[in-house]
Length: 420
Image (cartoon, rainbow, N blue to C red; front, top):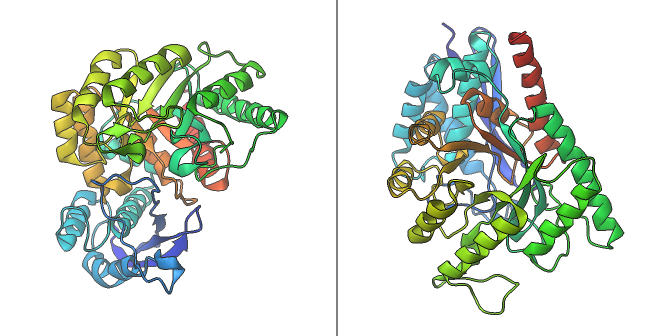
């Protein structure tokens, strides 16, 4: 078998113009693989640490040279000579070298860039596409298929304009729509949304994820303007698509209550729950992500109990990929879907373990990008290879998001050829 000959990391820029880390691996048979770590703007407090230099004299304090040096000086010497197909063994070395619960020594960003590059190198060394290698290696899905893509059209909260409390407003294609048809639908509706915003004299610039960040007055306005855009398209609301929303409620939670701009007084948890129930009824919101603060367990249980039969209640900040929190959420029935972001854990092996737990509980799996992305399309292969139900890669806009959608289109054709 091939073995790792050398590893080298460097600092690159993500889609926000902030530094992140890219790791390259060379094998002794000439195989080369490279992968980069994405970065989040809205970070869960339980996810792996993203190691930054905090040197205000350089890159505004956001540099990642410490993480780069950790790869080049600590990790690389330990992995030279290792078989890249031994992913679990290599990831265990990374975990042991770090030795902390939240990857505070080496940095989760340093570790995931290497772990992803190792997986790519392992796949290339046995002449397999990454998605197929993942499926064969971990057996998390019997068949290969493209996950239903959740397309983000409007950015709010910390990702967009400050007048919208909720972080993302999505369209979710009906499950029987194939990938290329759903991508075309997202492209057309996004175009119609832009035309609608322009016609109303609204701001149509974009936020961190590439979704529009319009100057609307409240969260309801976002749903209404998306409905208007859909009416101007060839598609039919509810027949062809539903809505989804990433609430990111921790961002507007303080002292046990939730403050939304559409009401002068903050909402108590039960009042916010009633708000969501009304939103679900009025706008057919199929997917609700992070509806409550990450330690408001009672509210999470309540919404999953009442809406979970007909809605996907997605845990992101609630879980942050943390195994212990996932197990607690499963036992409490606090949600029914997990948002999977490998950089929240630090290694592919730990991410696979979390997916196994969620699948065993009968949960839906949604594999996600981050707001600070790169052109690395690894996450597209990962979503297919683990049999994710949903993939959240942003809108069909901006190169770092389009890279993922284009990769899914390529995989779609590969799978089609395999099955015909």
